[in-house]
Image 1 (cartoon, rainbow, N blue to C red):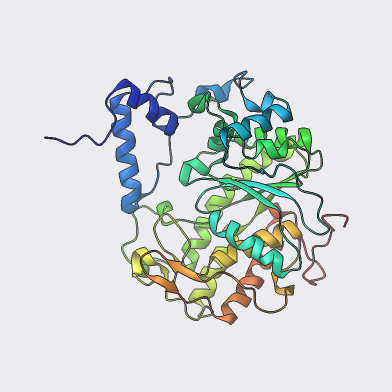
Image 2 (image 1 turned 45 degrees about the vertical axis):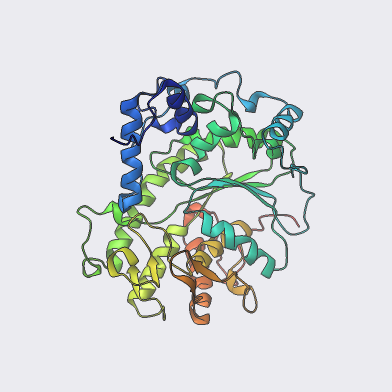
Amino acid sequence: MTQVAFPQSETQLRQWLQRFPAADNDGNGTLTVEEARAFMASRRRGRNGQGPPTEFPVDPGWSKARFPDNAVCYMTPPEIQAIYREVFPKDPQPVFQVPQPEKALRIVGTGHSFMAPGYRTFPVICRAAGFEQPLRTHTGGGMTGSVRYKWEQENGIFGFSGKPQPKLLAAIATGAWDAMMWGPYYADRPEYYACWIDFGLKYNPNMEFYLSDAWPSLRQLRPLPKSEDELSAEIFVRLNKEKHAALEKTIAVLDRKYPNKIHVMPTSDAMVLAVQAYYEGRLPGIEGVNRWLCGKTYSIWRDQLGHLGPGFERLEGYVFYATIYRRSPALIEGEIPFKPLVDKKLGKLDPPRQEVDRLFRRIAWEAVINNPLSDVTDRDRDGIGDYEHLEK
């Protein structure tokens, strides 16, 4: 008997649509067997290393002047928090509001697997700098961590109609948050960010917003390289410029509407500087550029999509810290107690060497102060941003 790997009945298809709204290829609100089969095929391609699709249908509701009336964003703060308690009954003491810390910004954030390493290390870095980092996130893998997907999911609209999950909206609506962080995704539009900004500023007028620019991926190369002999530092510089050009367009639109509110966390520049350091022999212990090509565990990246190799989660966290707090991570004294690195297949891994960690701190600051979209400069080279970000 032939096994069926995709839903068949109308009930199954409806359940799939609620779980995977992106499977509705034509965006008509009804999932067909053919659409389910195509979605399954795309997921298999992703698991086989080809990665997620870069083009996909988006609900036509995004082109309308207003979201559906049942969107959580139109409700009052008590109503939003009541929904949260109903949807997440196992969270007996949900944190909606954090008292103003002495040194830290109170941050909410979305993101996918490219943001996850930084979200893990960023609070550890802040603690080493002398303060605790309030950080409330709503993340997911791939598309499910994108700003568009999370807005739909939190609001209970389009493919999530009737099933809101307002993890961040319930917090933002208290008026007790200072900043929001995002990771980018394929085919992002300015309006995907604008809805979050509008909601954030409604309750937190001084709120600012930080977008990571991710980093180059082998998927940008056609044909895909067959070995690292085909790669060079110059290639990654070019790929970085391509990414930067696309990002500038989105930021320009948002800057016109929200002056001085949007800042880029230049993780891409930092990773390219790390690649250059590798080719110059300044990353001892790092054995290759990409594990997918060279088979070396201690590589800068581990697959063609661009997930970070072991140790590089520190570099991303340093970029987050440097951009948001306008201070060089190199000013943090001593070693930072990051959690041990563990790979599901390989077990415990060695941390970066001390000299590599120190180089990561310097690279992060160089990337931040030299990228105009970060809005951080350091003209006197003292490791502190020229303009104080907060009155503390």
